[in-house]
Image (cartoon, rainbow, N blue to C red):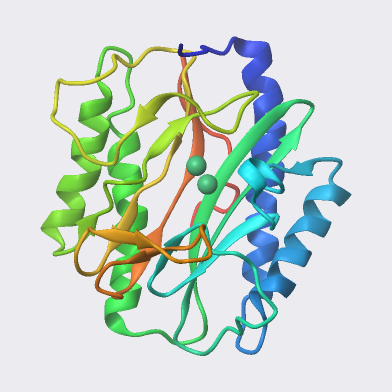
Length: 253
Ligand code: MG
Ligand code: MG
């Protein structure tokens, strides 16, 4: 069942969203060559806890980190590791959430490490743009197929592919709530959008095939052709006044 949120609940979710978005800014400050994904995770955890919140992903379904940190061909659910050291030219996806007063935020960014290839830079930009194309369709009376179609159309126009196996979701007192929010779809189809919905919209975009597979660690999802993947996510609320982006702190990030 879709749990619509009232004004007071959305106000509470703004706080969780703000801490989530700020933690990503802190992560960005620490992304550089030579840093391990474990160190990055520690910085994120410290910031979230210092803010009076809890890392939403720590222990979620048994996940061992505070953030999912996925590098290059890793799509999502990368486990922070002391052995994984960032190198110039890498792209690192940081996906994290903060739980504050019982409500969750969920947001992800793809961060370049130093100078990256033209293709990597374009992939990051298109993934981000596709999120905003999707959010542009988030209007009462529209369908979630309108959102997904807008995302996937922009991705395809740029020669990339949209991951289908993993999708966005409703969010609130649980990280993952109804409805499913696919990053593809048919305009005019799917769940009808209405005021009070709070959704994590999160395109995962691959440079090559949309196919993915899970590694033997039981968590890390990689592209089937081992080409690059990017991820961009915000928690957004649809109110009678329009869309509130709860996790976007720096409008350029
Ligand atoms: Mg996320
Ligand atoms: Mg999510």
